Amino acid sequence: MNIGCVLLVKDEPILALGLKGQFERWGFEPVNLANTYQDALLHLKNHSVTLAVVGLQNNDVCLKTIMLLQEQHPHPIVFLSNLAIQSDRKRLKPFPVYRRINKPCHIPELRKAVESLLAIHLPKD
Image (tube, rainbow, N blue to C red):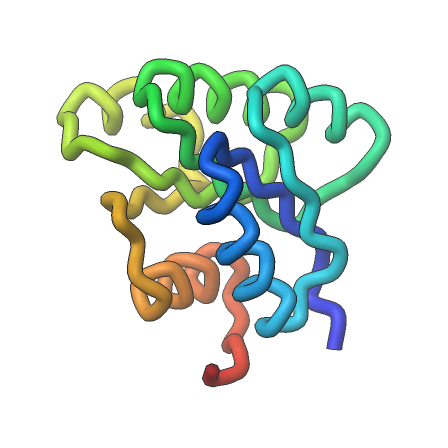
């Protein structure tokens, strides 16, 4: 079952590969990796995505990435955040189709965010 394409923007390779495997088990294909916002934007020039998951270690770069992705290619986004910052909500308010998860993210929480964003039910692990 192919649910759609996921773009993971993550600068921690081992965690990115773990998330990639989880999305593949849920039925997403392909699951593409980018480790910078520049790589993510370049990928989106040639590919469409169903969902983006953005979790960069620098929170400001992460927010900038989300804003650039949404401005150029609007789609649902899961934002993996290091910090619970009130200003994050203000900066992302113009983009209504996102869910924010504190890191470290747990699979049930990620599942719930993806299911609510895409209005689907994912297979159980």
